[in-house]
Length: 336
Image 1 (tube, rainbow, N blue to C red):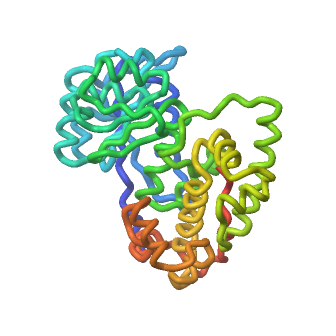
Image 2 (cartoon, rainbow, N blue to C red):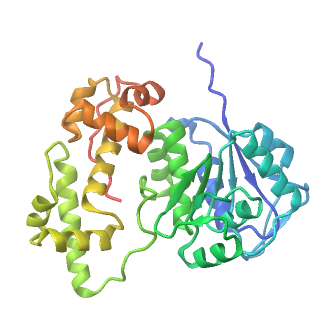
């Protein structure tokens, strides 16, 4: 009789001033039982220095169910953002975060949670991101932090930071994907009715649309749909631009304004996501996976996996393969 897997232990760090929205995101991703849909079990705990309820904005409150000592057991620690980004975190929280980092426990912050990590000194000398409207404030208050503006989330030395609001969802899903595979992250994303995959290197926001931009966006969406439907075929910027009726330079400019990334980076991202699905859900040989997802060769696919996922296709399959007898999935990924 097969034994159930041990749940992944997630610690939400709570103290007065944290954002209710971020608490909700963390709870929605890791606090809902989706084991009936193939998602592994999670054990989400609300940790705080004191057991008393914590008031949140909007008349809400959060009741901790563990003290900060539970962070020593956590597989991942997540720090919500703040309503007032200059809110000082309690000294016990800062010390607990320092101890956790010294133990090499992964720590993630959402939006203004970067200010809490900076207070703890965990971002000194490291790259970090926060909401685009807070980057100057973070740089001013914590000049030792290498603040980056043009990213949704960043990872450095076992510490994750993310941009504002929706980027927190992106980071949480990315952390699930990195630990449990693309299919698990996609299942959670579907239940949340959100995009399953946005890369951390995308811009935080795109240009405001105009009537002409709306028409261009429709054209670009059609080009992306074509590329996804023909992922196994080679695509160049010039080819895609011709399909859009634009020059390559104009196409690249409009594509980035519409999606927050470049055409080639977007295409590589979609190919990696499609390859992840095939590796998780089929027994196809690696050269065939590479062919179906447009990498052309196993060597090229392996290079991109190493660059973007810090693993190899073979090791990814060993870590995340589910039931290869299930029906083969479509390699096309939802257009983010």
